[in-house]
Length: 403
Ligand SMILES: [Zn+2]
Image (cartoon, rainbow, N blue to C red; front, side):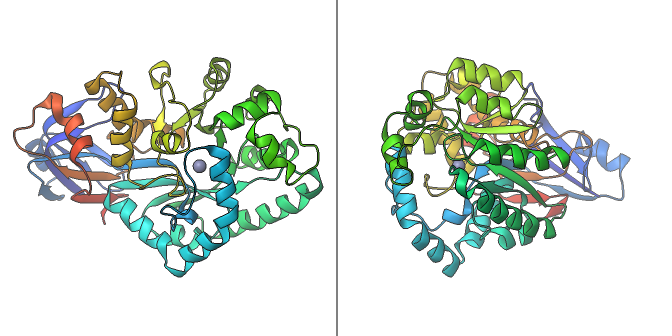
């Protein structure tokens, strides 16, 4: 059992509660939050450490990233979605091979942890990141991705997916939870989706999907037009969209689902997602780099933040993502936005993934980070100061253990 104290504790409860001169007593789970003296007299056997001028808060949760593309710097073409996708297909083999050779997945996981992210949702297309994720101290929801739009190869794609999924289940542990991701409405045949959702339902898993990421996806799904029409002609002679966007959302009814991006989603689609009590991931930098619209977060009751992969971003740090979001949503009140971004990187992401993480509350898991902050910082500036100045954190606890 441990007690740690600091000038500020950020609870990440709904009201963005801050405790001044507070302390937390925990083992694997959080036992109590109070003053240091009170906790020391109640739990005299606990180890004690006072971090002084610092913030203690829940470890950050990045619900959507792709580690297999961590070798990318500027090999892929940014600016528009289909142009980028074509460059991914063209350069995929080289990037994956570079990543394996340079062990860059392990390095990416190290930088993620140093920045204070203690849980990730790793979208895995090929399984190359499986062992690294399984042995990392970071908590990983390992989303085995399925895609395949051609009905003739649906069975092959499903078989290949099932093999990866079963492999990942062999690594399952407290910090490595195998799950399933459906790539996107333009790339995954409804037959495949229905098939994998049977497994999702039977095993009560959370499922992740890309949704309405780009203007190209909007034009294709609505009208069968635009750059995707040209793109698909390389694979099939007379391509047609597989499904309407609202029907796609309907397939996931009754399942804990995370829709990543939604930058081009319309009001009816957002309403349908919220009516099904499902979650929306916001990746502001990736959206900006791939030419998508700004997601109107001010219209959403909740959202969580994620970095996406280095295939469409310049870092896997949620602090960098929060800084990007502060700039992108320039009409919103700075102090309120800062709080929402911190909640979206902890509490809301934990909720979306169905974890008891991301909040400092009795019974929640003890994933905690310690970030130094100048002594003179006023309470009203704590959230803004954290976002503007944090690169690496001073202390990280995962499941109550200091890393
Ligand atoms: Zn993604």
